[in-house]
Length: 310
View 1: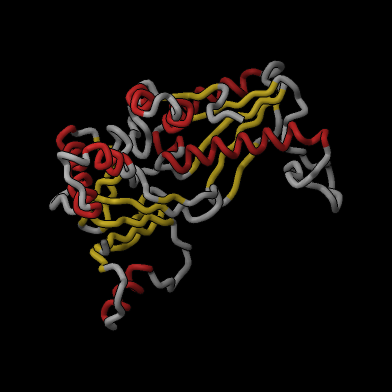
View 2 (view 1 turned 90 degrees about the vertical axis):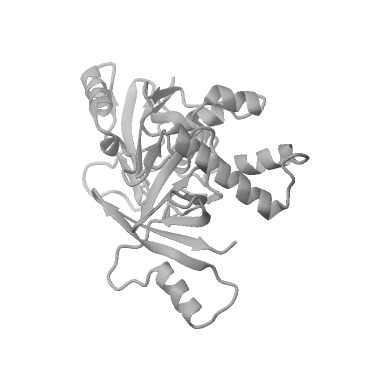
């Protein structure tokens, strides 16, 4: 299995530089090319994975009428049947690409095309599930494929699946301020001397920074720059939890920023309220909450917490 789709669609002008390795050549040079394919997945807007034979199609459309009790729409990944191995492998490969995009970009969904022989399907992956079209023969009826790709290219970033609450930052001054703040904070935490420990300090900065790519997150009246997450959820399914070293846009102080898609139910107690309540009761060894709240807009509702707890 490789980490590079057969046909990745990239933007000629990258308007969503958040959470990606923006300068692939620079990244390859720094790491000896080891992450070259891995890095490119962060630039993908839409990916297409194709197989020459029809049998790797990992979906089985339901029959007309009530489905049989043992019917499964997706290939049984636990099966040991030799004949199912190509389909299971193709499913895992497609899921891996989607996971890489969802964890390396600010996304609410990711679109892809899967092709098996002359049969194609359009897929839309979200955190709550996957939408899959019926199969169509793109050779016999190419207009479906042409229409989808044309509409996707003409769509805006939200329609393409990008998170509108995460705003890409291109200002060189802001980039420099972010790196300087992360560098100074890492130096204090690790007790490093910039004159003698430059290599270790540079590596520490890279743990929080994708070269040339930072994103602005807004929590109430506070703005934070973030880049490379310390941790992201290891699965596509879930609440899209991610944690960052975030730099306050006004003071340039460093805080820990946690972003999560909370459950959309009434009377839920927010994590920030719980931490503040614990703090008011004198509980020790907990982070101090700077700000927290829901980030809503254009059909989204995410929860973010900024903490001083280093």
